Length: 297
Ligand code: R2B
Ligand code: URA
Image (tube, rainbow, N blue to C red; front, side, top):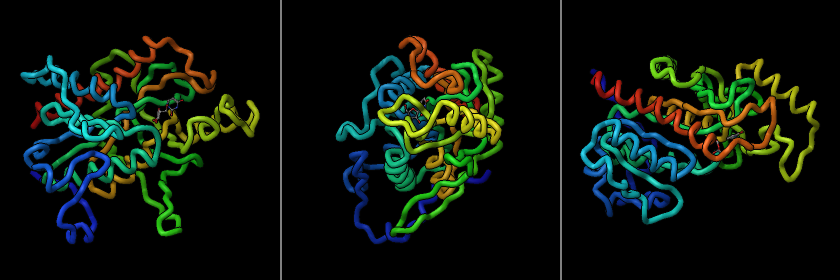
């Protein structure tokens, strides 16, 4: 059995007397991180704090935890930037919208897992997205996270220069998650590339933002090219999740439901109830995945 430690590759950290995880309102001298988090094996992240709280409750029931009925406490109650809940070995954390927001929380989460001396951790984003040519409600398991030019690369400005990092995801994990979707057989689950953009409107070829510098025809041509490049859904965080977990040596996956078909329109006009029920689909799929993993261990 190989034990994979959470790899934080930064020699500067060794020179710190204490590490303050500012946006989580946690720290190495204020909290006993190994005692609080040492047993974590799954870190599930998603945009909204309410949805991640609901996921923690769902997982507590799925795993038959004694306090499954109780309201889970927010571990990051000292801040309103992000919210964090724990259900046994499952950590459920909100990341807000977009690349900068998830980037900050992942730096602090990977350091938290490192300080807590966690081993063999799998990170999964359970999120929402816009689909391309898919029935709304379809769940997409990401094969490759790609940028707006359909390239599997995450580019970030560091010291005034663009630094490019790879975004390969674990193919075995994709297959495992697809199998869970098939076993559940409650909704369509497909594998596909996920395009991660820096904006919800023009950046995702929407015509309905405050500004728009292109035509309906330009939009359709772009989405057709995306489809040809294997893109099946569009969201705003997959590149960072893939790149940072790869750097940290963590298994990672992205599982997103599609809320609409972007070939048909831009507005999210489905009923509140329908959109809410769609958002439970990645939770159910990942819930089964976690139960199976725990049974096998
Ligand atoms: C999906 O949904 C959010 C935008 O509405 C964003 O966080 C994402 O990736
Ligand atoms: N999230 C996105 O980023 N895009 C969509 O179209 C829907 C949800």
